[in-house]
Length: 576
Ligand code: DQQ
Image: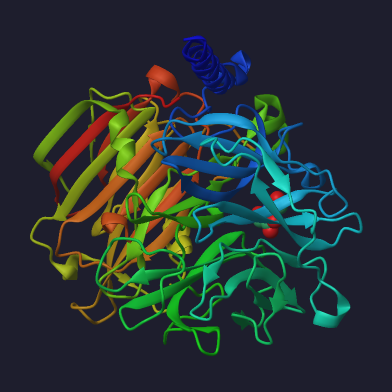
């Protein structure tokens, strides 16, 4: 009897301990965001942000025991970047949308990371245990690769991490010709058929960008491969490489260690500091030679396609084994001057996590916000078959909270006649220039611009225009080109913000409906054109169009009518 009583007391204490421990997690989340930040007009409602201060790259995303983890480069002490102070911020979620922020997982503390714990990845080992490999900026300011393991694997939040006593595991010593200030951001490891793990790390030799390859049997002793996984001249350093398989036949994701084969392609993404953009190529991973070869037409430089033609950097994917999907995270920096960020007390967002898969054409990736985001949708406004008359029509979308909304619209140019389209000159090869210099939002051209004006003030003194234009080649009424633009030039009456207009060529037919999904959240506009084939993210800080004074319009400034086949707009709740 006494044993039973003691057992019950023990169980009770354990439950209490568990609840108390988890209550701390919840309290952390609710109390961490200071009041003066919570109600700011540009503080987002449903994008991931730490409670305060500077955030950059997403690190080591994963799912473990049904809980999603996101780590991120965080300066705990201020709203500006300080690479020597950078820690791995940590947050967890059960749905990728509502996040609980925890204490940092890794902080500078050892000679091998004392000058900053930089980007890296998580690998789930064959025994199901997660491990982190991250770059440490060591006491000599050399970039080295370190290992950390969870302290307590029964804690689904994995709150505490232990650094390996063997750190650093990989050093850039002279013998291996690795530049010690350009050797960072190891990928998730993949397991080869030879039972050796492989990681690839970003580097640079002169102006040549490299993805250096290391192999290991035990995850502790790593050996540099004679050849890099891939390299290309003239790009500068490859930051945050990401390397993963995609199926040629299926939009479901694949585990990073899936064996290469005829039905599998591989993606190599690199982040180029020169342009501050992420570029990916699609190609073949030759498991025997241990090299990656991009497909014909792809070059691993700034001519390669981008995940996002706006602000989106240092991105990283992970395989969600529960839902069999590959999910992409990307850092979205501010467009405001540093002094404004300091005043706000924070800087940097993560884009809404996106499912990513290979398009049927095999020539590009497709991205779509994870379906969980739809749980935040509330009031819906729906239009069907509305005509946006040629010659300049603007129709307001009433009935949604325009500062925090999810909008999906299908446009179709009525009786499309390419003769009416503006001619694209041979020299117009830069879509961003077409969108800005051609003043895409304002001109009355033939086919477009048409699209949405978001985060707009009532009288349109301010707005961000996400739009499409259809061009034709000179002397050719068959060859068409669709351009997607996100024009920030009138996004705010405030001066000093970067209002660069972004643009991208689209690989779609203008004879089919042209779709646009836009996630609007106070100071971020994430747009997915052509069902996710082309994405553009921008940051804007309207002065007038904030809170309830924000409006949403559909418009057509082209001379031809454009039909809205359907438009759905939802108000969005805030996430945790
Ligand atoms: N950010 C990290 C580096 C990485 C860079 C430092 C990319 O590891 O190369 O915060 O934004």
